[in-house]
Length: 579
Image (cartoon, rainbow, N blue to C red; front, side, top):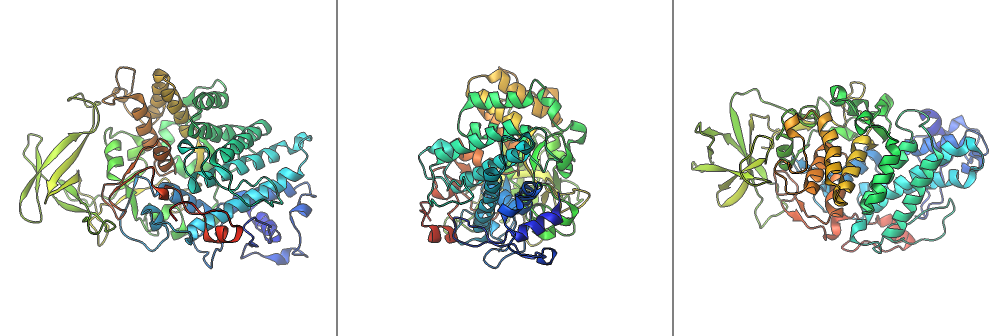
């Protein structure tokens, strides 16, 4: 993208009449390039390239650091979005307390003054304002305007989707619940929250319009396309529980092509996220260049150390159990990086829950040598010198089956507590803690840089699983399993790991099959929290880490983020219940 030009253009748009009632500016701009600092969006759009510059600016503000309440370093839409969408779920383990505001999201301790809560809201509505300037100015009757108009409708729909899924309750909990403000004009004057249903209805209109206007993207996957609009639209229909339209939308996007033909091939899948910007699988991403490297402030820095990152977020124990069912799974071997100590033999890691009197205290893993009697029975000696038996519990299915049947977890009654256990080769512990280090590289190694990626907001792997879930929920089990098997085949899972009607490999129903596959395929990409709560399920976080050791009910008010203080105190819109 025209990064330097875009930044200059953004600097000229330094006063934007957002409904917040706040004049928002962009710092570190070089206004000397222009003879006047009063060039605004209307003047820009008089130029043939003006709309293009503004849309490039929308993509730029999603990756640029911005100042909010005196903070700038690490204050980036992309980083905040992926942390706020992923960290309250059950795929991640926070290895220790941190002063970063990501902790509040991880611990459900959000408040309306946090910089991530405020920055995400501010930047999203800034982007929506910019799309509205394009929509209200470009002449749709001219075919040469269609692509940019389609991009504007796409981004307006996508940004509203981010807002309504993070700051409002899931659609499945009621269309009439409070949603977020709908901004459909560059000169908004109404300050109110639309209902969840009204926001979703508008998102559908915007994405449908975007698909109708756009063709192929005008560059790499950092620019949206016809297929990107349909991909996100399939997610929206899934969230709205309109399964027939979800299926039809995916069919339209595939246009007769085999689902497997849209995926990154197995042979290169392990490096997919490092090359997401140019992969055929990516429908839309936040494209980054080497100049956009945020170092320790990047998304990847929390998942990976490699000389510069923090490496404090690891996969959760329940997720690891899922991956380990088939050790050849590329999603396990390619994207997860256990830091083995090099010692021989296996160890047992025992999760010790926090005490009831201090539920927010970290719950850790007590690490000790494993005792194997040679007959498949495991035990260990505790800190008190006693020997504790390890129990093997079935997670799904009934009865002992083949290796591709039910999978198991290990538990021990340790000092009066039912503790989850993990049995592994010896893994290095995070310094000062007893949490084994397992890095994640889904946000790393673009152009070899461990802290650089182009984070993916929509890809074909998700879209195919959107259809799989829609099939399953509409009673078309065989078709649902066919879609799931496409994903599993690409992941390198052997033939005995494929599903078929009547052979669910230990699962009780196809819905559970699909949801576990979504969990493994889309882990860390910002889907799991929405998948759990929209299906009216509780979030079970009773595993090792510094996040609270508890089950979060889907009725918990804090599954939605608070409206930022700078918004509701100025515009007067109501705050979310519970804050």
